Amino acid sequence: MKKLERIVFLCIITAVTPACAGWNPFFGTAENQIAVNIGQGVNSGFLIPPPSQFVPFYMLPNIQYSQPTTFFTLPARQSLNFGETVGMGRAYGWDWTDFSIPILWASGDVALLHGENWYYATGVGVGFQAKENDRLGAKLLFQFKISGGYRFNERWGGELFVQHFSNGNTAEENHSYAFYGLGVTYNF
Image 1 (cartoon, one colour):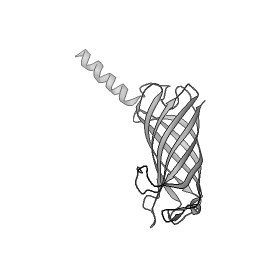
Image 2 (tube, rainbow, N blue to C red):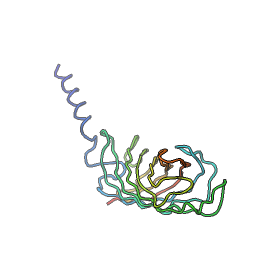
Image 3 (spheres, rainbow, N blue to C red):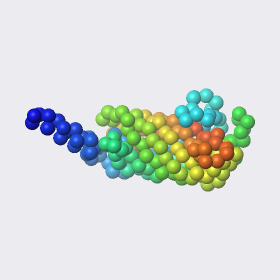
Image 4 (spheres, rainbow, N blue to C red):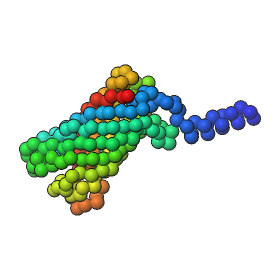
């Protein structure tokens, strides 16, 4: 009976506390992170865009400030983001220069799988773009992200990601923005 009690106690403790207190796969043991991300636009209405129909539309740069947290005991990060979408020229019936707009959003990412220096994560966010346009007929934006990252050492890391922005059908037009990107992270 004592063995069963110990197992139940360990299960409860594991369910309510982070597995590695003070350590997070995004940060190591650091408490802050700055990331600079860039992205290549894709003309897609899918949540996870297929790697086709690349367009002259970019996220240049996205500056992200993050802190470690947990989400139901999974390691996570909470972030404030500022990015500028930059469009150049026409493709697939869109004048991408019309979509050069600053975006500000808050997001959270959860490490679904991780090792000591690598992670696979997904995240969501909500924010605003500076103006409405024909592609997204609202200032309110929702973000979805899938990323994979590697920490080269305690300070520096890199990420590859797929990122999707839409207005969540809060307006008549909702063609979304989608990006394939890469980022550099600095932990301190």
